[in-house]
Amino acid sequence: MITKSVYDEKTGRKVGFNIVDWKTKSEGLFAHVDFETKFKAETEDGVFWVDVEVLEKIGVGAIEGAMRDALMNCYNG
Image (cartoon, rainbow, N blue to C red):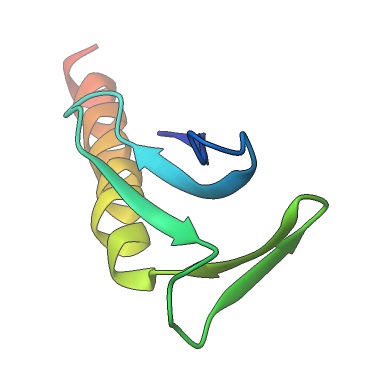
């Protein structure tokens, strides 16, 4: 799983972050300056509001998948 910065095409300003599951290629916007949520992340680039549902679906899903793969490799290895 990785995160990728999202930039405004006109201004070049960082406006959010995508999260990507390397294995499944699932991707989603999980933080943005314009989201209206109660969760925020303050960085040196500004304040980004976090969509926890996207973070859980893709991020937690990626971690759970990696744990399953590691466990299977343990038993099959």
